[in-house]
Length: 156
Image 1 (cartoon, rainbow, N blue to C red):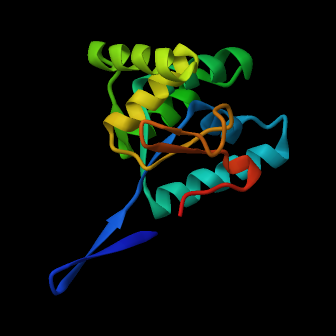
Image 2: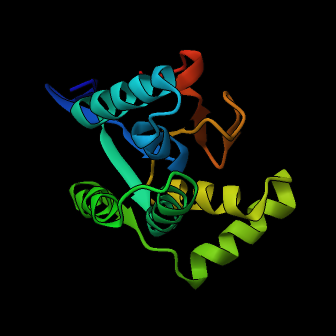
């Protein structure tokens, strides 16, 4: 695992960064229409799960199911299996407080509501990074840095 080391007195504490994974990474991981993006998305997910603490939100699970079953016409039970595996990650529930935070982010940053909800969830989970193809890579929102792993940007 990729760890940052922090000295505390005479000891050292290892810190693993939390990384929020946006819906599009999961979609590309099952989308066979673009083999290059498919392979890259799978590589990104594997590396993130092995080296960091992955985080998703209920929004990601919902969006993934809808896109995978409608746009990609994927088998519903296979998609359900992927969603079931989200249990192995931290899942942020989208509640009223998170929605209000997203509205504040919209007002300040001019992001769409749905992108702002992703940022709010990542902030709530204390993520260091958001992996997304849709948000502007290098952007920092509420202390969370956006990285587009399809352009080579990856968490430290």
